[in-house]
Length: 146
Picture 1 (cartoon, one colour):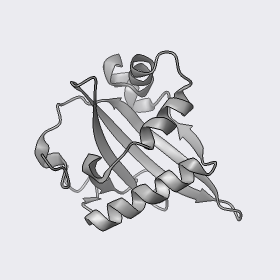
Picture 2: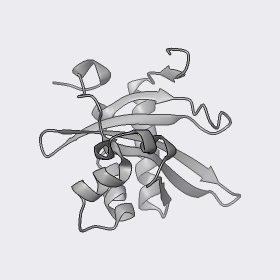
Picture 3: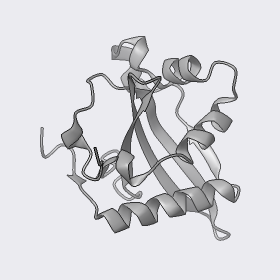
């Protein structure tokens, strides 16, 4: 199981730089590619799916707009780890973050920023934005200050 996920913890500076690039991309026309329906969701309780989470947290908002707003709030303290994309090994790594909503709901966020094309059309690929199946514990967050 350990070998199944190639994960690492980036330095605090690397994470801050990644978040700066993410925010720059979001503020400069990056396209958001959000996986509403995923194969893994077929065997998962609906409560832990992207679609259910986004509809629950942002019922009256356009999902892409709501997710853009949420990604702009990410900080180094929300960072968990960086993982290889096992299905698409040639693509850039994905970052995992965790945030708490409504003071109690842990939400797992997994994203990739990709520069596509000659003109640098940026896409933010949101693989996961769903309620966490297990409550977050402090040790999951290497840079969280309590």
